[in-house]
Length: 467
Ligand SMILES: Cc1cc2nc3c(=O)[nH]c(=O)nc-3n(C[C@H](O)[C@H](O)[C@H](O)COP(=O)(O)OP(=O)(O)OC[C@H]3O[C@@H](n4cnc5c(N)ncnc54)[C@H](O)[C@@H]3O)c2cc1C
Image 1 (spheres, rainbow, N blue to C red):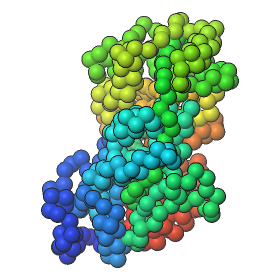
Image 2: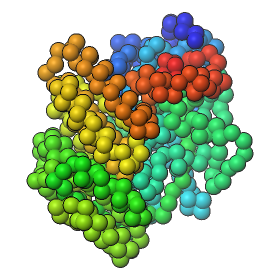
Image 3: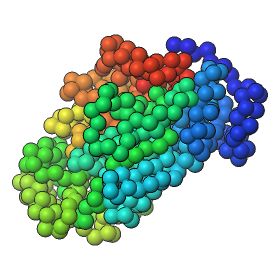
Image 4: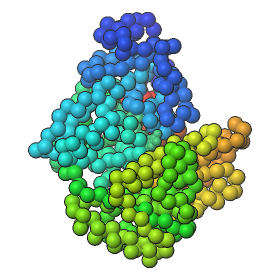
């Protein structure tokens, strides 16, 4: 790999100044600290120049210059990533897409919406719902951009029924590292026309090209949605119920699990009470559909099944107030855990759904063995767990040593269960070692060859994913 990149100098800055307004261009000390890290915070480096772009043509012009002069370049959306993927570890140029935040078109004949990459997930959801339409991907962090969501193949709560971001990307406009602009896919529903380059780009964490426009699939907005909060006196029993719900052929929109500690953290963090916190563990389910009768029939079967499996009760969350209290608490879990400790790192493994309970039990064993706090919650319905190893009052050396041992154990166990390193947060910089270990040389080399086919000079987000 060529890592002898050119340092940004006066000539480069003058070139960018020739077509970028001053208020959108930041150099060295004028770059805010926020741009030196992502949401997890452990991996840090500043870009040498930050440019807030407003068009595909601008991205292309910047990229051509970077390519010609061998300058590293990285795209950044809202910086809510959790694996250091948007951190410019070799410095160079950072392209901030948040001013490319226009919803270009809603097409109700093809049920698509066309967006610029800096549109925020929460803005898109609100906009399409006003048109009685629905964009199902629902990752926890609603202030992330669509460009970031596509680049990480973001998942979220509704993946059980509706799938992940990949399932909703019909077309992309992208700028290649050479500066060339290409269109992939489109508004078509089917596509069997050669290798799907579009699908390679989804989840590639900004290493292959920069996305400047996306055509996304929409669905009609379900008319009714109800959640159930189901308390259990034992986390194992709660999670063991999930494969049985799946087996019953019910299709909830979401199945989340949480234990009492997480609820208490979240109550503290938000200063708001959860509807119930007496029991050791809870599963939270949502059902949606077009009529009250249809949704009720579905949730009644599941409610009865949960009671048969040892649930202590079933609370129906149907008023706006209750929905807000439950889902705002669920949305704040990561922030609440973060607020409860001095530093943390996350393991975002995905395992087969019938292995979730065993995996969580294993995290408790590791926690005990290493005397380290490991709270967790997650998407029980799709087997994706969010496990947080917390530093608390450990000194740096003890923390680094224990974190390494804990992660080695957790990723090894996930492999034993035929799980994978990341369900939705990606590999970025922080999780490369674990992906490389699991996939082995052949797969990682294939990925590297794909990377170099797109980016022969290795200037785009170098040092990430497969490198
Ligand atoms: C509280 C919290 C909850 C979260 N919950 C979830 C969840 O439920 N599910 C989930 O999947 N994730 C979740 N995340 C992680 C994060 O929000 C997602 O990874 C999100 O997709 C990142 O979007 P972003 O705009 O912040 O991208 P950034 O963090 O800025 O960038 C992420 C990656 O995408 C690349 N990128 C960004 N824009 C472009 C572009 N236009 N072209 C090419 N590459 C680009 C970057 O280079 C980087 O590699 C959560 C994060 C937090 C803090």
